[in-house]
Length: 394
Image (cartoon, rainbow, N blue to C red; front, side, top):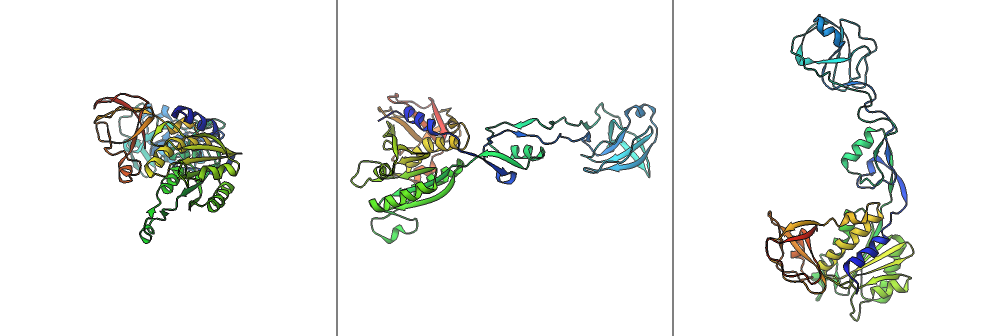
């Protein structure tokens, strides 16, 4: 067995970005920039008004004349003329500032009658003008490579007149679940001894949440021919294959040996952690295979630790972005830890984190209740309530 840190280092070393591709702005949510997003225009493209009001010459205000309204400007439609002394132009928020004007008087500070406007309010020192290029200039890098494209980043890209972005390709993911006892949800009641297969749904959902493109989800019996055919199909379509079950040393735990027979090099097998000791990881050319335990809780804990790290790196993020440990306060005590590093399912309770009472790896109700994992190092002493522990979102 190897340590958690050693296993994580091996996964991290394999988690390199895939090829870059160009995608339309509308399809870029959640993707990671392979190249910087560079502004294609100045913003704003001219001096613009930031308020509804009247554009005029600031020097005229000292004379307090009645101003002649000589036209109007709207967002996207400029006034075609020059503002001379004693004249003004009606304009609205976002409208280009007319030539000759250098001040906007807001509409609340004026009175208008026909084509005549008078300033009646007490003016502040603000001119209510957003200068040309004050946000960014054409050619300026707005979003560096490595940016995860969320809604706000997409607003910036669109505002820079960018229609397509160079992003890292999404990893293609297939998930295989193995076991004669497994049945599709809704069908287990039809056969004595069957249990609903659940781990693959969690692994697939977690994978998609971390940027993977799901290619297939396969439930296979513990039959060498069936497993070989399923593994061959999964390898033909995916960058990453996750296998739940068949990772231990039971009489019918064939999964790992099937992938070895198909050319997979095993990079590690068995980790000194709890839950999840049977986890294994391999490489077949440019493809990666992650073997997880069949118990749903064990599968989800280890997928959260290793699958998310792998997908983060393959999709262009730093692999470490998947495991951002932070400190939290225990609200209930924890027992001492054995020689295996332990990841405790827990829940935030408002004041800190409370470990779930039952850590059985087969329990699924408790799995649904957990929202954090507590990391406990090997041989850690018992921790009373009030202790500080390391956690990640689960």
